Picture 1 (cartoon, rainbow, N blue to C red):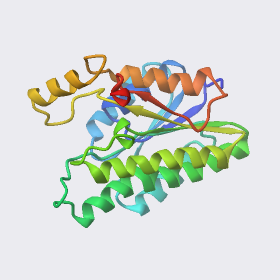
Picture 2 (cartoon, one colour):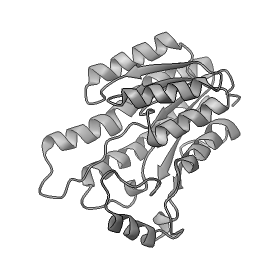
Picture 3 (cartoon, rainbow, N blue to C red):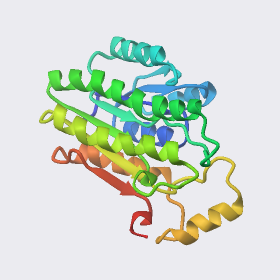
Picture 4 (cartoon, helix red, strand yellow):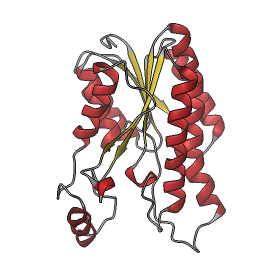
Length: 244
């Protein structure tokens, strides 16, 4: 798909992987709708950096734990850009939930942010894409959707649901819209991770290093710009963790 001058909606775009993906698409000439929740300062920095590449950038604030915010985001995004060509569902929450210490509100939060919001965004935007004749939806999943860690089961379960959502949406929105997933592995150290934790991750990973957010951005660029004949796929960008 030719993407120059078209618009991408990216959730969780203020920093880390979302920011890198946003700037990579701006380099290709895409206008951007950037969602953030709490990170307004970082979102504005990302906006300024993307605008230096000559594209239009609008910011959209929403708390995906509240469904009313998701609905408001959809309305505001469509109002700002009635023709959205790319949707990147990147926003996610992640924290440790050992068995026996999982609260109902933890479970609800993981599924609200990591699965419910992506579904309703993809449903609303994807149906418009189908009507306009083209579109790309990419869901940022996680390699642990296929290899869940026992201390992060609600998170892994929400990401596993996103795999099913990706495959189901690919069938529902074909042939005009392609829906795919990317499953990052250890691309960035987790917030609050200790040096010994990071060493263990590197030792376990076949490529013996952390990846880089640019690795994810390149996978996004491939799915958005380089092929229109991939749909329903989940591409691991995980340094080989899924083969261990």
